[in-house]
Amino acid sequence: MLQTLLELLDRTHPVLIQTHDFPDHDAIGSGHALHWILTQRGFCTFLCYNGEFQSETLKVTIDELKIPLIAAKDLHLKETNQIVLVDGFAGNTNVTDIMGELVGIIDHHTPPIPASCPFIDIRTSYGSCSTILYTYLKEHGGPIPRSIATSLLMGIMTDTAFMTRAVSPMDLEAFSTLFFQGDWQRASYILKNCLALQDLPIIQQAVNHYRIIDEICFLELDLECTSELLGLVSDFFLGLKEIIIVVSWAFEKDILHVSVRSEDPARPADLIVRRALAGIGSGGGHVHMGGGAITRNRFPGAEVLRSRFLEALGKKEHP
Ligand SMILES: [Mn+2]
Image 1 (cartoon, rainbow, N blue to C red):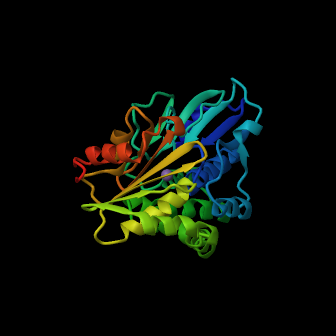
Image 2: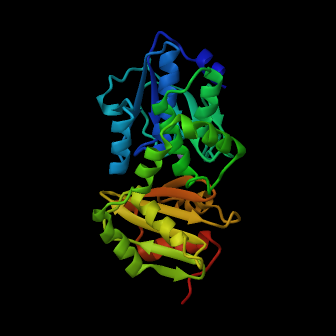
Image 3: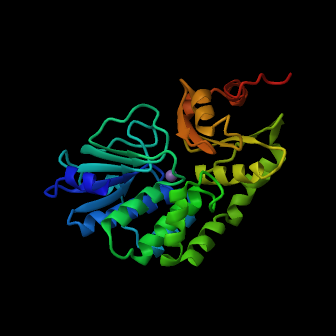
Protein backbone atom coordinates (compact mmCIF):
# COMPACT_ATOMS: atom_id res chain seq x y z
CA MET A 1 0.00 0.00 0.00
CA LEU A 2 2.84 2.42 0.82
CA GLN A 3 4.21 2.13 -2.70
CA THR A 4 0.79 3.00 -4.17
CA LEU A 5 0.51 6.06 -1.94
CA LEU A 6 4.03 7.21 -2.86
CA GLU A 7 3.19 6.94 -6.55
CA LEU A 8 0.08 9.09 -6.12
CA LEU A 9 1.92 11.87 -4.31
CA ASP A 10 3.79 14.63 -6.12
CA ARG A 11 7.23 15.49 -4.70
CA THR A 12 7.05 19.07 -6.02
CA HIS A 13 4.28 20.07 -3.58
CA PRO A 14 4.00 19.77 0.19
CA VAL A 15 2.14 16.89 1.79
CA LEU A 16 -0.04 17.70 4.79
CA ILE A 17 -0.77 14.75 7.02
CA GLN A 18 -3.95 15.62 8.85
CA THR A 19 -5.18 13.85 11.98
CA HIS A 20 -8.82 13.95 13.02
CA ASP A 21 -9.68 17.05 15.09
CA PHE A 22 -8.90 16.96 18.82
CA PRO A 23 -6.41 14.18 18.02
CA ASP A 24 -5.80 11.21 20.30
CA HIS A 25 -2.77 8.94 20.71
CA ASP A 26 -3.68 6.72 17.76
CA ALA A 27 -4.14 9.65 15.36
CA ILE A 28 -0.92 11.30 16.52
CA GLY A 29 1.12 8.05 16.47
CA SER A 30 -0.10 7.27 12.95
CA GLY A 31 0.65 10.78 11.75
CA HIS A 32 4.09 10.72 13.37
CA ALA A 33 5.04 7.49 11.57
CA LEU A 34 3.73 8.63 8.19
CA HIS A 35 5.49 11.98 8.58
CA TRP A 36 8.77 10.16 9.19
CA ILE A 37 8.35 7.80 6.22
CA LEU A 38 7.44 10.58 3.78
CA THR A 39 10.30 12.77 4.99
CA GLN A 40 12.69 9.82 4.47
CA ARG A 41 11.29 9.44 0.97
CA GLY A 42 12.07 13.05 0.08
CA PHE A 43 8.69 14.72 0.53
CA CYS A 44 8.23 18.09 2.17
CA THR A 45 5.79 16.97 4.86
CA PHE A 46 3.84 18.66 7.64
CA LEU A 47 1.83 16.92 10.36
CA CYS A 48 -1.18 19.00 11.30
CA TYR A 49 -4.38 18.95 13.34
CA ASN A 50 -7.39 21.08 14.21
CA GLY A 51 -9.02 21.61 17.59
CA GLU A 52 -7.13 21.18 20.82
CA PHE A 53 -5.30 18.39 22.60
CA GLN A 54 -7.57 16.35 24.79
CA SER A 55 -5.24 15.94 27.72
CA GLU A 56 -2.00 16.77 29.48
CA THR A 57 -0.93 13.21 28.71
CA LEU A 58 -0.99 13.96 25.00
CA LYS A 59 1.00 17.15 25.48
CA VAL A 60 3.64 15.26 27.49
CA THR A 61 3.85 12.60 24.76
CA ILE A 62 4.20 15.15 21.95
CA ASP A 63 6.88 16.96 23.92
CA GLU A 64 8.90 13.89 24.96
CA LEU A 65 8.77 12.17 21.59
CA LYS A 66 9.34 15.46 19.74
CA ILE A 67 6.35 14.88 17.47
CA PRO A 68 6.38 17.67 14.87
CA LEU A 69 2.70 18.59 15.15
CA ILE A 70 1.55 21.95 13.85
CA ALA A 71 -1.90 23.51 14.25
CA ALA A 72 -3.47 23.70 10.76
CA LYS A 73 -4.24 27.39 11.34
CA ASP A 74 -0.50 28.09 11.63
CA LEU A 75 0.30 26.51 8.26
CA HIS A 76 0.46 28.29 4.94
CA LEU A 77 -2.53 26.59 3.31
CA LYS A 78 -2.54 26.40 -0.47
CA GLU A 79 -4.67 24.69 -3.12
CA THR A 80 -1.61 22.75 -4.27
CA ASN A 81 -1.06 21.09 -0.89
CA GLN A 82 -1.70 17.37 -0.89
CA ILE A 83 -3.62 16.05 2.08
CA VAL A 84 -3.46 12.59 3.60
CA LEU A 85 -5.89 11.95 6.42
CA VAL A 86 -4.99 9.53 9.23
CA ASP A 87 -7.37 7.85 11.72
CA GLY A 88 -10.30 9.85 10.39
CA PHE A 89 -12.70 10.15 7.51
CA ALA A 90 -13.26 13.10 5.17
CA GLY A 91 -16.73 14.49 5.66
CA ASN A 92 -16.97 13.47 9.32
CA THR A 93 -17.63 16.37 11.68
CA ASN A 94 -14.43 15.55 13.53
CA VAL A 95 -12.40 16.26 10.41
CA THR A 96 -12.19 19.94 9.47
CA ASP A 97 -11.95 20.61 5.77
CA ILE A 98 -8.61 22.29 5.04
CA MET A 99 -7.44 23.84 1.80
CA GLY A 100 -5.67 21.48 -0.57
CA GLU A 101 -6.31 18.31 -2.55
CA LEU A 102 -7.39 15.26 -0.55
CA VAL A 103 -5.14 12.48 -1.90
CA GLY A 104 -5.44 9.76 0.72
CA ILE A 105 -7.37 8.35 3.65
CA ILE A 106 -5.73 5.88 6.05
CA ASP A 107 -8.20 4.79 8.69
CA HIS A 108 -9.63 1.90 10.70
CA HIS A 109 -13.13 3.31 11.40
CA THR A 110 -16.17 2.07 9.52
CA PRO A 111 -16.78 4.75 6.87
CA PRO A 112 -20.23 6.43 7.14
CA ILE A 113 -20.37 6.66 3.33
CA PRO A 114 -18.15 5.16 0.64
CA ALA A 115 -14.87 7.05 0.42
CA SER A 116 -13.91 8.85 -2.75
CA CYS A 117 -10.31 9.99 -3.17
CA PRO A 118 -7.33 8.57 -5.10
CA PHE A 119 -5.86 6.56 -2.21
CA ILE A 120 -8.04 4.71 0.29
CA ASP A 121 -6.66 2.32 2.89
CA ILE A 122 -9.42 1.60 5.39
CA ARG A 123 -8.93 -1.53 7.49
CA THR A 124 -11.86 -1.81 9.88
CA SER A 125 -10.68 -5.12 11.31
CA TYR A 126 -7.63 -3.43 12.87
CA GLY A 127 -7.76 -2.24 16.44
CA SER A 128 -5.72 0.84 15.68
CA CYS A 129 -4.67 3.03 12.79
CA SER A 130 -1.14 2.85 14.20
CA THR A 131 -1.13 -0.83 13.19
CA ILE A 132 -1.75 0.18 9.55
CA LEU A 133 1.24 2.51 9.78
CA TYR A 134 3.30 -0.35 11.22
CA THR A 135 2.67 -2.27 7.97
CA TYR A 136 3.85 0.80 6.02
CA LEU A 137 7.05 0.85 8.08
CA LYS A 138 7.60 -2.82 7.24
CA GLU A 139 7.18 -1.98 3.58
CA HIS A 140 9.49 1.03 3.93
CA GLY A 141 12.18 -1.26 5.39
CA GLY A 142 15.10 -0.58 7.70
CA PRO A 143 15.17 0.03 11.44
CA ILE A 144 12.31 1.91 13.09
CA PRO A 145 13.45 4.90 15.20
CA ARG A 146 12.72 4.47 18.90
CA SER A 147 10.46 7.53 19.10
CA ILE A 148 8.34 6.34 16.14
CA ALA A 149 8.02 2.86 17.65
CA THR A 150 6.97 4.41 20.98
CA SER A 151 4.38 6.67 19.30
CA LEU A 152 2.82 3.72 17.47
CA LEU A 153 2.92 1.57 20.58
CA MET A 154 0.95 4.24 22.45
CA GLY A 155 -1.61 4.40 19.64
CA ILE A 156 -2.06 0.63 19.73
CA MET A 157 -2.16 0.48 23.54
CA THR A 158 -4.82 3.22 23.67
CA ASP A 159 -7.16 1.99 20.97
CA THR A 160 -6.99 -1.67 21.98
CA ALA A 161 -7.10 -0.86 25.73
CA PHE A 162 -3.75 -2.63 26.22
CA MET A 163 -4.63 -5.48 23.85
CA THR A 164 -8.02 -6.31 25.33
CA ARG A 165 -10.32 -4.80 22.68
CA ALA A 166 -10.67 -5.14 18.90
CA VAL A 167 -7.33 -6.97 18.56
CA SER A 168 -6.54 -8.42 15.12
CA PRO A 169 -3.57 -10.69 14.37
CA MET A 170 -1.80 -7.72 12.76
CA ASP A 171 -2.29 -5.63 15.92
CA LEU A 172 -0.58 -8.42 17.84
CA GLU A 173 2.30 -8.58 15.38
CA ALA A 174 2.73 -4.79 15.48
CA PHE A 175 2.55 -4.80 19.27
CA SER A 176 5.13 -7.53 19.74
CA THR A 177 7.52 -6.06 17.18
CA LEU A 178 7.26 -2.49 18.46
CA PHE A 179 7.19 -3.38 22.14
CA PHE A 180 10.96 -3.59 22.68
CA GLN A 181 11.88 -1.27 19.82
CA GLY A 182 10.01 1.52 21.56
CA ASP A 183 10.06 2.61 25.18
CA TRP A 184 7.20 0.44 26.45
CA GLN A 185 7.85 1.36 30.09
CA ARG A 186 7.52 5.09 29.52
CA ALA A 187 4.60 4.58 27.12
CA SER A 188 2.58 2.52 29.56
CA TYR A 189 3.46 4.77 32.50
CA ILE A 190 2.21 7.86 30.66
CA LEU A 191 -0.98 6.12 29.51
CA LYS A 192 -1.78 4.59 32.90
CA ASN A 193 -1.35 7.95 34.62
CA CYS A 194 -3.75 9.84 32.41
CA LEU A 195 -6.01 11.10 35.21
CA ALA A 196 -5.24 14.05 37.46
CA LEU A 197 -6.68 15.30 40.75
CA GLN A 198 -8.58 17.98 38.85
CA ASP A 199 -10.57 15.20 37.13
CA LEU A 200 -12.02 13.90 40.41
CA PRO A 201 -15.12 16.15 40.42
CA ILE A 202 -16.19 14.58 37.13
CA ILE A 203 -15.70 11.08 38.49
CA GLN A 204 -17.52 12.06 41.67
CA GLN A 205 -20.46 13.39 39.67
CA ALA A 206 -20.57 10.24 37.57
CA VAL A 207 -20.56 8.02 40.66
CA ASN A 208 -23.29 10.11 42.32
CA HIS A 209 -25.58 10.55 39.35
CA TYR A 210 -25.30 7.46 37.15
CA ARG A 211 -28.59 6.05 35.91
CA ILE A 212 -29.10 2.36 35.20
CA ILE A 213 -31.76 1.06 32.83
CA ASP A 214 -31.44 -2.72 32.63
CA GLU A 215 -27.84 -3.39 31.57
CA ILE A 216 -27.34 0.12 30.23
CA CYS A 217 -25.68 2.87 32.23
CA PHE A 218 -26.24 6.56 31.48
CA LEU A 219 -23.76 9.18 32.71
CA GLU A 220 -25.33 12.55 32.06
CA LEU A 221 -22.71 14.97 33.32
CA ASP A 222 -23.23 18.68 33.63
CA LEU A 223 -19.62 19.56 34.39
CA GLU A 224 -17.35 20.50 31.49
CA CYS A 225 -15.35 17.49 30.35
CA THR A 226 -13.06 16.53 27.49
CA SER A 227 -14.08 13.59 25.34
CA GLU A 228 -10.99 11.71 26.52
CA LEU A 229 -11.99 11.99 30.17
CA LEU A 230 -15.54 11.04 29.28
CA GLY A 231 -14.21 7.86 27.68
CA LEU A 232 -12.09 7.03 30.73
CA VAL A 233 -15.04 7.44 33.10
CA SER A 234 -17.19 5.33 30.77
CA ASP A 235 -14.56 2.60 30.78
CA PHE A 236 -14.63 2.53 34.57
CA PHE A 237 -18.41 1.96 34.58
CA LEU A 238 -18.09 -0.67 31.86
CA GLY A 239 -15.89 -2.55 34.30
CA LEU A 240 -18.91 -3.05 36.59
CA LYS A 241 -20.09 -6.54 35.74
CA GLU A 242 -23.81 -5.65 35.63
CA ILE A 243 -23.19 -3.04 32.95
CA ILE A 244 -22.89 -4.02 29.28
CA ILE A 245 -23.38 -0.64 27.61
CA VAL A 246 -22.38 2.83 28.81
CA VAL A 247 -23.76 6.01 27.25
CA SER A 248 -22.26 9.23 28.55
CA TRP A 249 -22.24 12.87 27.65
CA ALA A 250 -20.88 16.20 28.81
CA PHE A 251 -20.36 19.64 27.36
CA GLU A 252 -17.01 21.08 26.50
CA LYS A 253 -17.64 24.70 25.58
CA ASP A 254 -20.33 24.62 22.86
CA ILE A 255 -19.99 20.96 21.97
CA LEU A 256 -21.76 18.11 23.70
CA HIS A 257 -19.40 15.14 23.58
CA VAL A 258 -21.18 11.80 23.52
CA SER A 259 -19.40 8.54 24.28
CA VAL A 260 -20.70 4.99 23.93
CA ARG A 261 -19.03 1.83 25.15
CA SER A 262 -20.42 -1.60 24.36
CA GLU A 263 -19.49 -5.12 25.44
CA ASP A 264 -22.17 -6.61 23.20
CA PRO A 265 -21.01 -7.10 19.59
CA ALA A 266 -24.67 -7.40 18.56
CA ARG A 267 -25.13 -3.78 19.65
CA PRO A 268 -22.09 -2.03 18.18
CA ALA A 269 -21.25 1.34 19.75
CA ASP A 270 -20.71 3.14 16.45
CA LEU A 271 -24.11 2.10 15.11
CA ILE A 272 -25.90 3.05 18.33
CA VAL A 273 -24.37 6.50 18.45
CA ARG A 274 -25.11 7.14 14.78
CA ARG A 275 -28.73 6.07 15.17
CA ALA A 276 -29.30 8.06 18.34
CA LEU A 277 -27.79 11.25 16.96
CA ALA A 278 -29.33 11.07 13.50
CA GLY A 279 -30.53 14.53 12.52
CA ILE A 280 -29.11 16.36 15.53
CA GLY A 281 -25.39 15.54 15.48
CA SER A 282 -22.92 13.03 14.19
CA GLY A 283 -20.95 10.11 15.42
CA GLY A 284 -19.04 6.99 14.57
CA GLY A 285 -16.29 4.76 15.85
CA HIS A 286 -16.02 1.03 16.34
CA VAL A 287 -17.90 -1.95 17.75
CA HIS A 288 -16.56 -1.46 21.30
CA MET A 289 -16.29 2.29 21.44
CA GLY A 290 -18.06 5.05 19.68
CA GLY A 291 -18.33 8.77 20.03
CA GLY A 292 -20.21 11.71 18.68
CA ALA A 293 -20.94 15.37 19.07
CA ILE A 294 -23.91 17.71 19.13
CA THR A 295 -23.58 21.48 19.03
CA ARG A 296 -25.11 23.21 22.07
CA ASN A 297 -27.95 24.78 20.07
CA ARG A 298 -29.10 21.37 18.83
CA PHE A 299 -28.94 19.55 22.18
CA PRO A 300 -32.49 18.27 22.72
CA GLY A 301 -32.17 17.95 26.52
CA ALA A 302 -31.21 14.93 28.64
CA GLU A 303 -34.66 13.28 28.59
CA VAL A 304 -34.98 13.34 24.82
CA LEU A 305 -31.40 12.27 24.22
CA ARG A 306 -31.77 9.35 26.64
CA SER A 307 -34.98 8.25 24.85
CA ARG A 308 -33.19 8.45 21.53
CA PHE A 309 -30.50 6.12 22.85
CA LEU A 310 -33.03 3.71 24.34
CA GLU A 311 -34.81 3.62 21.01
CA ALA A 312 -31.51 3.08 19.17
CA LEU A 313 -30.89 0.18 21.57
CA GLY A 314 -34.33 -1.26 20.88
CA LYS A 315 -35.76 -0.39 24.32
CA LYS A 316 -38.54 1.76 25.61
CA GLU A 317 -37.77 3.82 28.70
CA HIS A 318 -39.19 2.39 31.89
CA PRO A 319 -42.01 4.44 33.45
MN1 LIG B 1 -7.92 5.12 16.13
